[in-house]
Image 1 (cartoon, rainbow, N blue to C red):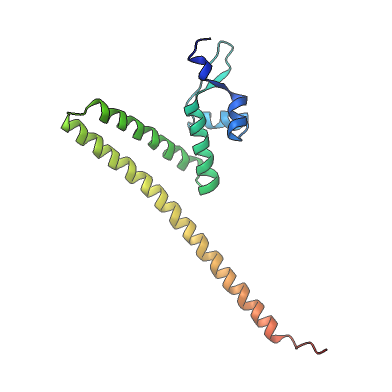
Image 2 (cartoon, one colour; image 1 turned 90 degrees about the vertical axis):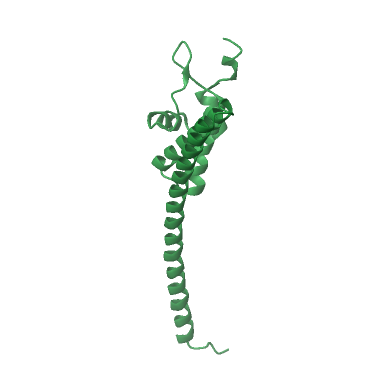
Amino acid sequence: MTARSEAYLQIGEVAERTGVTQRTLRFYEEKGLLNPPTRMEGGFRLYSEEDVRRVEQIRRLQGLLGFSLAEIKEMVDIEEVKDQLRAEWRQNPNDRARQRAVIRRGIEVHERQYEVITQKVKQLLEMKRIIEEKLTKYHGSLDELERAEPVAQG
């Protein structure tokens, strides 16, 4: 193996580090959430540190924010586009036309991320409103029952 290949991790190591199963990693790959990994001669999957970061991002979006896999795919794909735009910006420091194009594309991808997050916030706020209504109803019912009970005499 080359020095470069030493930076790669096998599927079990990635699963352990990220807290997902090997099956989940293969599922992410199948659904396009994770790029196909490099393969060893025997067909074993090899993952980079970037792959590990991507899995961690997927888990964070899915677990903490309640994103669907489709939303997660869109969000992580956008992150890759943003990385490409940053690289393109650095490659063309004096090309104003190219820089304008990069900025326009950057605006597009950020606006899309904003739309996805705004929609998720709306859904969460609606869920919060429904729960608040239920809590108000439960508290009201409890208050009525407590007022209706005869006071216990000792």
